[in-house]
Length: 304
Image 1 (spheres, rainbow, N blue to C red):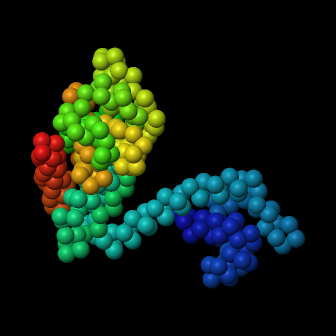
Image 2 (cartoon, rainbow, N blue to C red):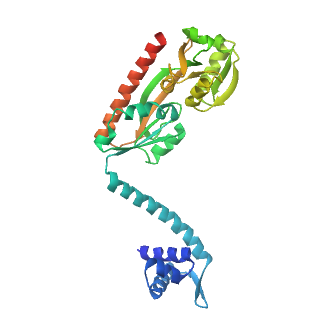
C-alpha cells in the first residue's frame, strides 16, 4: 500500500511545491522527494517534470489528483462517522421525514421521549419523500416517513398512517359555520392547492371534475404547512393533511370535514435487514401512540 506516498503527493499538488508540502507535513524535503519517486516507480509513469529544481506536474499527475480527491472524500466521510460513533456511540438515531410529518408531528413525538435524560441524540432531517427514499437507500438514515406514492423498493416498509383530508378555513370565514364542506362550497372562494403533480392534488382534481366544480386556485405550493400558513393569512381556503394542520387547529385556522374522501397515506421505511435499537423501537411505539391520539383529537374537534 502507498497511502503515505499518496498523501504526500496530494500535499505537494495542493501546496504547489515540495518544500511547502514538507513544512506542512513536518518532513524533510528529501523525504518528500523520495516518496514521490517511489510513487512514480510504482505507477510506472512520470508524475512530475524536474525543471530547474522545481516540480512541474504532468497531465497524469492532475488526473491522479482528481481521483485522489474522490478517494479522500470517502475517507473523510469514514473519519467523520468514526468521530460520531466515538462521541455518541449507538445512542443516536437519524430520521428523514417528509414535511407533513416532520414539521409538527415528529417534534410532538420527540417531546415525549426525554432525550436529554436518555443521553440520546436525534438527527431530524426534513425533505421531500423522494429524498427520504434516497437517504434511506444510501444508509444515511435509520427511519424514514414518506408519501405512499413513492416507491419503497429495496427498503423495509409498512403503512404508518392513512387519513382523509379536511378543509382549512380562516377563523372568521363564512364556511366555518358549516359542519361539512362540499365541493360546490369551495368553488365560491379563493382556493389554495398542492402542486398539480402531487398525488393528493390529482385525486382532488378528480373529485372536482366529478362534481362539475372548477375552483378559483390562487396559489399552488408543494407543502401542507404552506397551505396552512396561507389560510392563516386569509389568502384562501384549502384541503389539507390533518396531521400537519393540527398545530393550527382552533388557534389560527378552523378545520371542517370534507364531504368527499380525499385519502392521504404515509409509509414508514427503514434500511432492509438492519435491526432496530431499543430506543428506535420505543420511538416507533411513541410515534404510533401519538398518531392515534392526534387523530382522535382531530375527530373530537371536528365533531365539537
